[in-house]
Image (cartoon, rainbow, N blue to C red; front, top):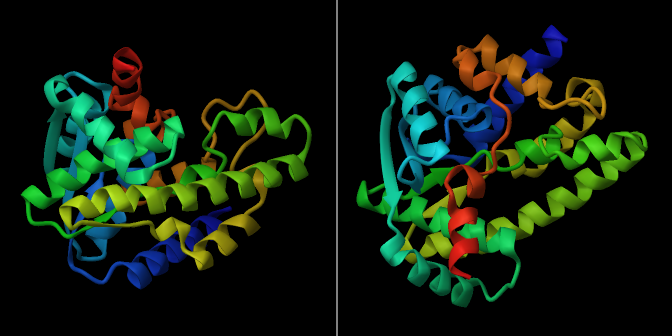
Length: 251
């Protein structure tokens, strides 16, 4: 297991170095294990990192990201979404992406605000941790899939990856309104190919596994990600930022 964790670390480093050429970058940051692991490795590699967090006042992502960024001591910027212009932004996003998929719309809204925040601090490239949940069984749906066996898990993984790659194209369209490019090192083909070969037992144990992504969490602890972040259960961006809840209210 130790060797596999080290190899995972190496593969992540290579994926970042291949896809991220600018030294000044933003990290879409919630304080969870995925974005914190990404931020820690980028800082260790010598990138000039600004953590970028968005969410409504008192949302989980705003409060938790502040707690983790203080522990890390990294530069951290927050965009607190205001209800007064949220409806206008959501309508604008729907026009831009022309897709009536709630999850896509919510993610596009979130990264619209991330990109707006990045532009304010003259950050042209924002790195995201998208791909980890798909490749390392981060979603709750994997608990149901594993009941039926590994082939069902891998089938779900393919479906999740296909959706995520397509969605991130729409998300980049939203980000481009501010001249910002989003980069996903964990969705590069080399990293996908490597991650798929990691035995499932290092990702999810059984249908009762509420934590999941075990090898990711082990690597995070190994390189110094705070334990409170490394062992944090998943909370999707649209929920942690309160974008989903607010969007449902104004529909």
